[in-house]
Image (cartoon, rainbow, N blue to C red; front, side):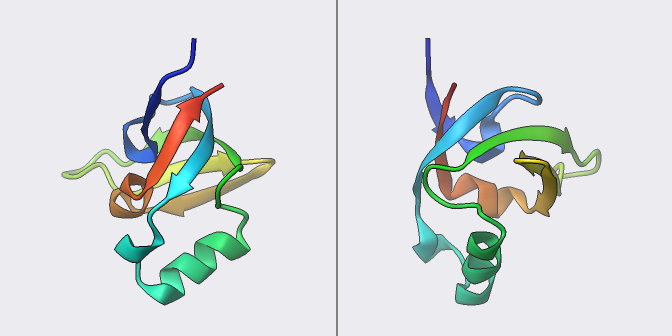
Length: 83
């Protein structure tokens, strides 16, 4: 069974596919950086770690064999469904 949520709410270790990104929530340079790392619609991702302080920033996102740190605000702009 799949469920849809935003990437910032995805449980650690749960695999998902990005189904939509609201790029208007991000600064153009940040959006370009994330896209250049392969973080876009259709990408398969998983949360490997969350920060331990305050807002729990940053989030470590696994995409392929790479781990990318991103802010929760960026992850909140991404709709995902579990796989």
